[in-house]
Structures are given as structure tokens and as C-alpha cells.
Image (cartoon, rainbow over the protein chains, first blue to last red):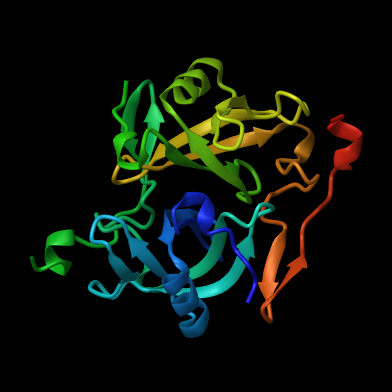
Length: 125
Length: 125
């Protein structure tokens, strides 16, 4: 298996998720070695959830899973770029296509992104 | 100033750098509060270098600076996406346009990116 530098950051590597068609950056999160192997094995993006302290199959609850289309590794082997097909069109738990749905303008955050679903209709607790 | 969650990761926030025209993801690195303020103030991307433990104006040695075109903040205020004009066309210290110049294929890394410069001609020591 290609060697990645998990040691640099305490066992975690940042992962940038990009839509393989539109090239929109959808989100970034972290993977550990287990989530990384699961991503490679299943072709579906898995992360390590720092808040829940567990492996997190992206979309496991919501159905908004991410199918791996291409994986790129950076020059230092300490970050990963995954191009995906975003199933059902939304990556953000707040219902937007991208987690980066707010743009900084005049020192304020302005919404500038497509809302795909209402979170309260998807997450039941 | 817009409040970002620097506490979550020991004072650092990951920053994804994307070419504002081609939408190619060029690199990712980290910012601290000082580098963040410098980025906002100067319109040029600054990071915190974890290896050198200092503020790092991107391109300060090589001239391959990054001009800020748009800044987006994610849903949790713990990661940043900056769309840039990459001056002189290369973001990677290995001479490539993007740090993600290698694609994972059949468990091997295959070069798939444009080389813009020869590092030994740019970095003198």
C-alpha cells in the first residue's frame, strides 16, 4: 500500500473532497489509517470523526454518501484529495451542496451556495 | 472579524487552496490567527509552517505567491477555502502546478500534473 505520513498529525491526515464533475470543493475532514483502508476497499469515502471519535462512513445516516472517482496524494504524503460523485447532491450536514457555502465579504459571511435538503427532515435526533 | 474555531486543533485551521479559474485544488496547509490576519490584510496567502514553526508567506522565497480572489468558510468555522490566482503558475515546491500532482492507480502513485519549474533552480539551499 502507498505509504502516507499519518505520524505527522497524531494518526490523522486531512482529506479534501472535490466534486469530480463540477470541481467544487465540497468539504474537508480527516482520515485515520482504518478509515483510509475502508475508503480504498469499498470505494466509498470514510473519515475519522474527531467530535464523535469514531469511524464515519460519510452519509451513513443521511444517505449522502460519496463515491470515490479519483484519489490524489500531495507532495509530502500528508494530505489527500478525493474526487467524488456526491450522491443526492449534498455534502454538508446543514443541507448545502458544499460545506463552503458561505463567502467572506466585507468581513461578513454571506450565503452563496445551493441548499439541497432541510436538515431537520433528514437527521431525526 | 468573523470568528473561526482555532481552538479545535491547537491554534491551527486547515486551508484548502484552489485555483480560482481552473478550480484545480493546488494545495492544503495550515493557518494560525496571525497568518490569517496577514492573509486578510495583505490579500496574499500566509500560512503557519508546522515544519519550520513560523509564519510562512506562500512564495516568499520562490516568488510563487498566491493572490486571494475569494475566501469561503465551512459550516463549522473550522476550515477555510481560498480561491487564488497562483502567480507564475506553480504551487508545489517540487515544481508542479498543484501539490496533488500524483494520482493513485492500482495502488501506485502515477505522476499526472504539469511541471512548471525545476526546484534546484529556484531554491538555493
